[in-house]
Image 1: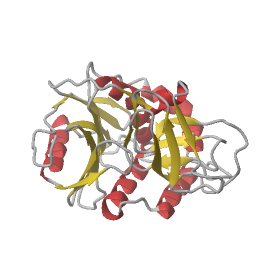
Image 2: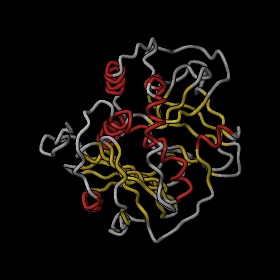
Image 3: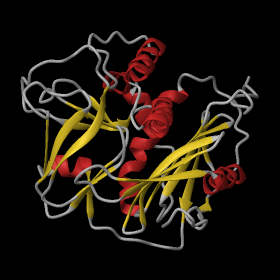
Image 4: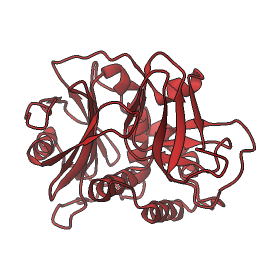
Length: 316
């Protein structure tokens, strides 16, 4: 993969699966890759990674990760790290590939505004959902423009979602949003099964594509797909149910937007593997982690715009 290549987004897009106001398109490619790395949740469950505050005082913007395994570990942007072993829950700022038997500093943001407490247990976990999709878009825009997220915007987004669902959270926790709607979300999730050997997914709410996520390995995609979809479902409940007029041709057009967009190449932060390509134009924003010239994870979003129709043709 390189900045000058136009073949990065040559995927076959499936016909949509539809339910309520959601449309889900799976992406496939003739080029198959197998990568020897673990997902973050796998590593946590197998006790192959340690996650700690950087020191006794802690830092809102950083966590210390120690990979104790002989495999690389993939930490996806927008993963939610929760538990009383930390002073507060965090959301991961950017996709990171952690080398074998290595300790790195992971760039994060706060997603639990009203807690900053000493560790009271060793409990730590990775949420079953990513940060909700509107937050993912805003964070991607901020990282492109400023190389870091806007912490106040994150808190404001969380507060709005808590209000949307009439949730009273003493600590302002993102995880409580998912837990409040968990049964409904899991029921809806059952309506969408990945196509065989899919590498990615584009998800639309109503008449608007919300996000595209693509991986270099179908096994890794299958692990992350439910998390990605849950993050969009959370936002779908804040929209009325509308007839869907979004088709796979719209996904192809969006992929071409990324191909033609402005691109910047950045080295991954100290100790982490790969390079990050950032994409931007007046309609889209996104980023891709590549390692050894291979795509590890791409996430792309359609920007909010009053000129782009979003939700129309309300169902009676």
